[in-house]
Image (cartoon, rainbow, N blue to C red; front, side):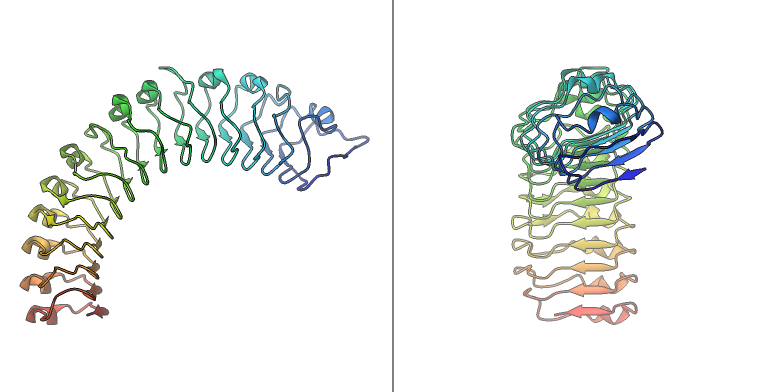
Length: 355
C-alpha cells in the first residue's frame, strides 16, 4: 500500500521496485500522462487499486496494460481528462471504473462493453455522449450512475440486458425518453430519476425495486404499472407535478416512506392509501391544492409522522385520527384547520403537535 497524495510532477525514484504493490493512491498529485514515475510502476503487476482523484494535469490516462490485476480505477475529479487510454481494454479484472467529475471526458472506450468483470460504472458530471454497449455486454454490471450528464442524449436499448443491475441513477438528466427495455431490469432495487422528465413506460417487471426517486421531476400522473412495485419501501415525489395519488398507490404494501412535499398540484389521494400498513412517514407539506384526506388514513397503523404543514385548503382531518396508535408527530401548521377531532386524545405516543 502506497499513499502519496500531492506527488510532485518532478518525482524521480532510485531503487523503487513496487512489485508487490496492491494499492496506490496518488490523488491530488501534479502528475500527467507523461510523468516519469509511470515507468517504474509498470512492475506493479499485482496492483489492484489505482486512485488518481483530482490529478488535474492528466489529459489522458497512461498506458495501463502492465496493471493486469487492476480491479478499481478512480479518476474522479480529473477535470482536464479528455481520454481513457485504450490499454484499459486489456485489463480483464477491472470491477469499478469511476470518472465522476471528469467534465472534459466526452467518450468511454469503444470496447468498454467487453469488460466482463465490471460491476460499477460511475460517469456522473461528465461530458460523455453515449454509453457504447450492445446486448450481451457488461453482464455483471450492478451499479450505473450517470447523473449530471448534459451531453448524454439517450441510453442504449440494450440496457435491458443488464440483468444484474441493482442501482441506476439518471438524475439531472437531459435524456427525454427511456428505452422500452428498461422494464427488463428485474434485479433493479434503486432508481433515481429526480430532476428529469423521465419515467419508464412500464415498470411492472421491476418487482425488486425498493427505492424510487421522482423528486423535482415532470411526472404528473401516477402510472398504473407503478402498482406492481410490490417491494417498494421509499417513494419520493417531492417537488413533482403529480396531481393525484390514485388507486394503484394502495398496492405498494411494503411502502414505509411517502414523500410528496411541495407537490403544489396534488389535489386528491385515493382511499386505497389505507392499505399501506407499513407506512411510517407521510409528508404532504405544502400540497396547496389538497383539501381533504381520505377517511382510510386511520388504517395506517405504523404511521409515526404525518406532516401537513402548508396545506392551505385543508380544513379538517378525519375524526378517526385517534386510531393512528403509532403517531409521534403531527404537523398541522399553516392549514385551514380550526378544530381538532376529540379522538386526538387517544394518540398516546404523540410527542410533537404543531398547529
